[in-house]
Amino acid sequence: GQQLNQSPQSMFIQEGEDVSMNCTSSSIFNTWLWYKQDPGEGPVLLIALYKAGELTSNGRLTAQFGITRKDSFLNISASIPSDVGIYFCAGHGEEGSQGNLIFGKGTKLSVKP
Amino acid sequence: GAVVSQHPSRVICKSGTSVKIECRSLDFQATTMFWYRQFPKQSLMLMATSNEGSKATYEQGVEKDKFLINHASLTLSTLTVTSAHPEDSSFYICSARSDRLTEAFFGQGTRLTVV
Image (cartoon, rainbow over all chains, first blue to last red; front, side):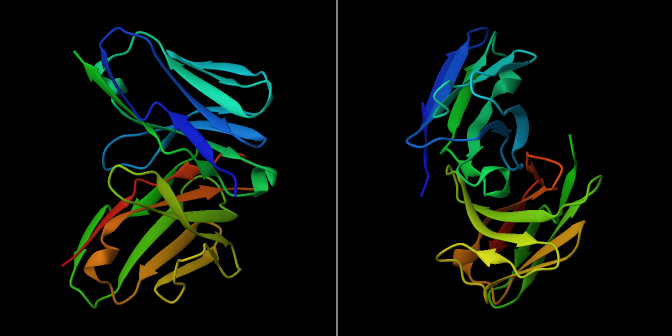
């Protein structure tokens, strides 16, 4: 089945630094979603991308849907302590939005004040 | 965004008993609900997909008689862990989606501990 490779697996950064993480797939995805999960909570949707090449921002977060439709990245600028958590990429593959969401393995972000 | 409420957030039960977890979409009609299981430091593992009024579709390796899913209305789905054992201890998360939404929205999760 389709799989997403998310990297890096974890990051330790200083407050104020910028962060970048990405997801790649061997097959085409029709939708890319980025979620953040705090400990003991469910994932919260950050950004949704629907078209190849689309670049979308949500505050300090920016995400792009790769032109090849096989990758996406998420950038966080000027990180703050509350950015700590696990970030997941997810997407819909061949079945489109009627199919199941496929998740990456997550990027654990730690921010040192 | 749309709101999905999951209850309870934590539950401790004795081995051999059954536990029911509820997932409600509060401000939209959830035609499809998904149930996930998450082990510590791992990603979400899809257990089953349920469409309102239909039987749930279980992923390979998930016992349907062990994890009973009901999606009787457009705003409520339940997951019942039957005859729970310690190895069923985990974090269970639901998500819901409507025909009008491409995104899925998640509940807060339920931490199940079987002792």
